[in-house]
Length: 439
Ligand SMILES: O=C(O)C1=C[C@@H](OP(=O)(O)O)[C@@H](O)[C@H](O)C1
Ligand SMILES: C=C(OP(=O)(O)O)C(=O)O
Image 1: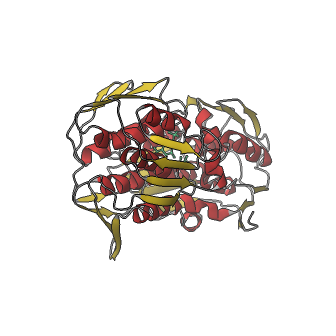
Image 2: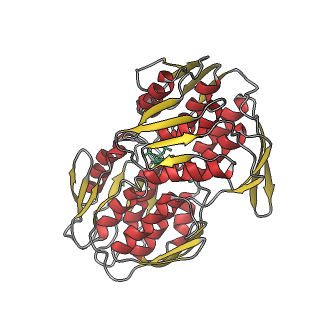
Image 3: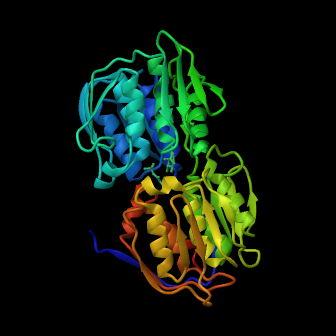
């Protein structure tokens, strides 16, 4: 337990522009696809953070060559694809707390086969992976649990895919289906592979990111709604040459909410109408709360347009950015309800419980359900000063920076953020960027 903290003074007004760091979801997908592909890939603007660092280190340990070049405009990572044949047949891989690294890598290593162990921070060992392992092992791979069944750490041995049809549950995390889709071309050597989704599929826009990027690497997936996906045999990932990583739409949510709460305009650069990330739809939720939103191909701007209105909506499609709505709700004119967010409970922390506990500290009344959160802002004219615990969850730290902002209906509070460096998971410079828009 670290005892570092960051004190934020109240912020009367926010305004400015922020260039977003690269998307975590896109960065880690592109890294694995590049490694599996034939040829060299130049990745522009890859996210530099803990989650991508563990993926890069894992690829290096597996024998995949990559280099990083600093240019006047940003970074370029040069990855030499291994065409599905890993140079190192054994490795011990530390995955931190990166779901986007451990889930797809588990699938890739299980299908390729070898002698691999994957582990992470203690919380990673509490985050489910059983539905993915079940899907893989039922099809012929050999993945074992070395700790608790259903959770990392994992030991992967040599197996062989013998089925032409896999089925995977989609109601705990969409990353399991993403993982199978990404490795499907490695399984579809002689015959087509079909992946059936059992039960409801959550977080669907992340599957769209996966399919979009798979296509960029030259592989076509046939889709029957959200129920099944088929990959015809003989397709291999091809290098797209140069590929650009968009700004992170989840990271955008904090600045857009800041503009909506604290005046604005605040503009984020790096995502917009052309984005492939579902989290750009956070802007629509903010607009529903009364913010004025404008969008270009590669930017989004948010501005307050009077007091924020309470919202009652289903947030299954944007589980990460929805955390930002829960905090924006402190500034709204009534009770907000966030529905269909059960996946919050199995992420960096139990986010429903953590969010409820910290929102209460600043004066909100919160009702917590298995898959919902109801937030009623304090009646007082200001939020209560508080010391916010962040639960080693980057999004808790980033979300709660917003409680320092003065809104139209309610003033913010001086806020202490414990363990602010947890933002390193996806956005190491977050608090510097936040300080720049605080006026
Ligand atoms: O595929 C992805 O890149 C992600 C999918 C989502 O997870 P779930 O599918 O577990 O909801 C999201 O919360 C996570 O931050 C990133
Ligand atoms: C849930 C998240 O991360 P992960 O990719 O580790 O699932 C997140 O970034 O909010």
